[in-house]
Image (cartoon, rainbow, N blue to C red; front, top):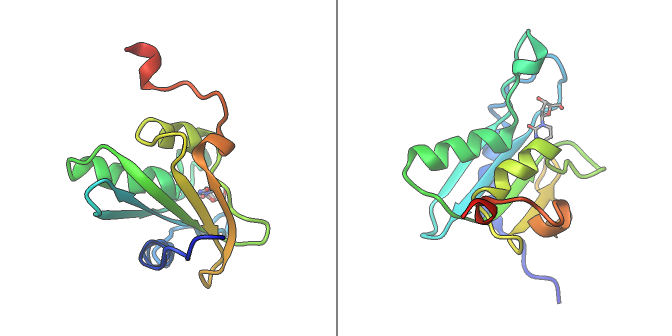
Length: 135
Ligand code: THU
């Protein structure tokens, strides 16, 4: 049986998406993550006139988490356009991997919060390289 939508995390991702700075792509993205202690952090994409300097929503959420002294992601929601589902880019998958276990649920929603995809970090980034490799 599919689990119920994670409404608080979806709402946080949608709220973050509302602050996206995406004047070049016009593709607003919000991301929200939950930590082990239940706290939520969010981010939005921040583009730049020098295009490669833009930052993804997921990276912003991770920065907010680290700034707050947290280290473990237990769930992640990305709110983008779609369908198709706005799955995290390759670089963000690796950034998420640093702080999340392979089984961590990743949910992608559309601009009104409808779930487009429910997956895991392991499915998005199989056989990943992580901190354990350097232990
Ligand atoms: N983007 C994100 O912020 N997260 C994703 O998961 C995919 C793409 C942003 C980057 C850029 O600002 C815009 O979406 C179009 O690629």
